Image 1 (cartoon, rainbow, N blue to C red):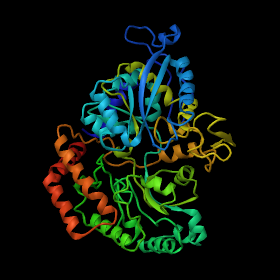
Image 2: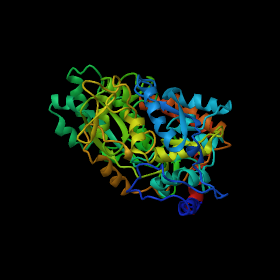
Image 3: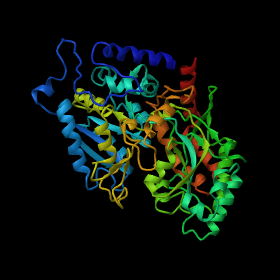
Image 4: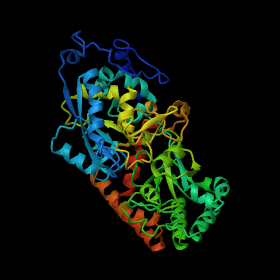
Length: 527
């Protein structure tokens, strides 16, 4: 189905309620609260009677945290939840029970909870394994929320807009609420600015053109006595392997930017002309693997990149790595400095358009075990429109975990993310444009970021979700091969023999059938 038709169906369903119920807003004017708004139901009564009656509906929310103790498991986590519930109970009669789960275990635990029929009313979808939007949909684990969203979360729907919502719309039905943030992530080489300054290489880093230019900087870092390594990665994927970019060529700008269409196994590359191909078999991928091998041989790369379960960003924050490769958004320098404490020089490798994969990276779904769908959607509506809740769930409690100076949030005194009591990610949940800017950004950062996002180009495939349901064995086989080989290829262990084995095992796993799923979906979407 064409994306215009999907958007039209979604728009008609939701607009019908918007014009018969509460007031609407544009993307430029997001309301601060919705406590005075009501929506008439089919019988002519008004939703919201439970607020008036004083009855409180409890919902269970599953969310992930980085695992470093910065958010829900930190000292102020329960206090933050209580502060949020004080608002939601008063405004919409809903109490939210937060279940914070370590990100490394989140997908597995959520899948088991749904399988066992536990009451999970709302849950994050995120970027990994069974926790991705596409896998949750394909496994039949989430609800169609088209009508629910239109009736109980009209302001959130209007704020996000049909263009973004098309990324979680399948067959004209809405299945998720994406995090509303800058979704046209670009690809960067993130470098320690303090080390560049010590070596007098800041301008060299700013003006890099070729991979040889980058290698000269890595050589200087290696020879400087830096206790860590010039580059590398972790979490089993070596050089932060970013779905959507293949780093290769003579010039850094020769890197291939593509729309992965939800593929998280580095198996598919698409172009904007309607073609899907085997990514691993591409000459450009082979060039990337060989380049990483050269860096390992030169002593630039972290030796455990292929096998360390620690994420590359965490290794950077810990001072193990001078530089990493990352997908990030407008304001990347500020966000990386906030998380690492280091001044960062961020070199743009290439720009990515708004695509379905980015929309499906972070957001909310209602699992099939949801018991309170109406109350859940009311909570979502408030989350996406209330700055007070967004700042609580992102930065914590003002005066305890952060303070505000000149319109910008910052840690108090010598505190950092680990010692502040609470510090969440602003890209993970809700409407990030309602959050206070963080230290290092201008007071106008959120407004500026929204304008940048609204002007971003879109992929030709925005709104296309490849339905892999019924192909669980195929997906499992492709995933197993990726787990075995991709980290080694991107972690500096390339050899002709290992690369051929990678290709052979992909063939045996059914890579041609896997690519065909994507090609057929593209053909149906674009015809």
